[in-house]
Image (cartoon, rainbow, N blue to C red):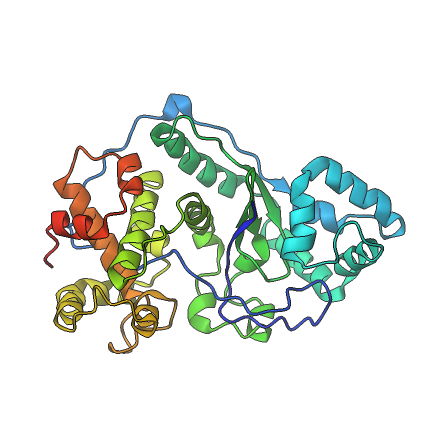
Length: 356
């Protein structure tokens, strides 16, 4: 199964080539807003996992792709298929939107991608920014070690890096986790303005946020949004659960890193938490299923519509995080697995006793 965690805010590909996806992508960020008031944040016990720490190696798929011999493209493709198996076809067909792998045009379109001047330049930027991935490997290994503690029977995906042509930040298949490094070249990357990416988003497209973004994207495919999630409250709680999952896998990481927000935005949320909550309650928005209301409060944006411009976007996600933290504080015997399976959103709200 091919799944994706999309990183782009209404991206138009400026490289009008056959190998780019021919549609817009909306970044549905799992990242939320700031930490809660200390009274709502449960003190997570950090499990002892040192002796169980896993090792993780990220395979440099993008370098193998761009090192393909243009004079022997058939041979190069055969080697990629042998090394990466089904992921190669997923990359070519589902990520780059190339012709089907069994068509005559496939080899030529793949060659066009690897020889495109802009894409070759982007790959050089990737290699300059990430000559090795030791830090990312260590960060992800730590997160997956905690994951194995909470889910001992789970399988750890095979992790590869890629250059997705500015289409995807994270892609998962049944066995692979792929990371689009071109999405994390830093705020000053020359290509981001050309793609129409807003400044509020490119500020977080940096190495600092890479590891937590990867786990957020992966978690959103492991724990898919349930079918009964149609109200604002349900979407807030779903996102809050994903963020609490990050709390468990990155127990010593600052919330600011988990949520991709500035200190000013974090402070605004903390100081205005009660006002925002009362607004949602007084306007009877929590159980609203109106798409426009949900989008304003949950989706990516420079600020939350209807609130001051100093507010961060996705305030509903942040509030969902606070509700989950309050719920877990009041239910210390509830395990992470039980929390992630619990889809009675009204029960979670009721038993959280959340009252900022």
